[in-house]
Length: 241
Image 1 (tube, one colour):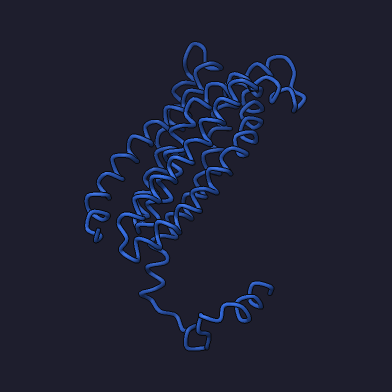
Image 2: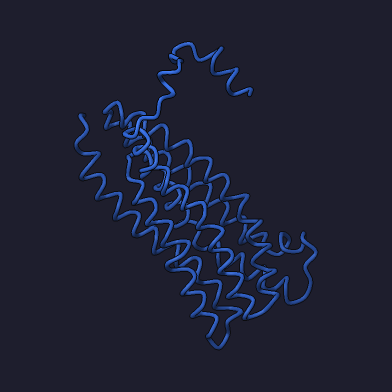
């Protein structure tokens, strides 16, 4: 209700009327071309967590607990990266629509730099304070050790995660929603779940399983860089100087 009040009273430059509410299939298709991959991306996170818990439960209940604690700690860092991604998208998108090649490149450049700064700082912080963070949740014995191990191993892939998150925002801004979806599928489903299952069958699964996450992030990051170079050649290069 407040959003409607603010819109009709403050957005003076936007024309309102019944005729603007009439559905337009062309616009709807354009919205879903970008929105549908984003919807699937959100669903994949829950699907990955569900799948990982099933795999880890076959190894040890302590591993499930350790991953659950790590996931909560990780989200504080990822939310910062997601916030920057959501800032990158409109900046790049506005300038892409306006045909400003230089500003599109600047938006990509600084968005990537700032995201990586956050992820590097977060990685260092987690490496240093892994044990105090795990102990904050009242864990004891083997579960503390597993949580500390999970934090230190999985956070190795946060640089790759930063690249993926930033570039996903760029892909959406440049109307390349499918490229963004490919990155999500790689990092949250296609690589991490089969690899976690394989590592759970090794001689020391409580050590090996955590490597599924950084490997998935790094593979997805390499793919994201290849895709953005392709997009740069096909889309960004065609914008006027």
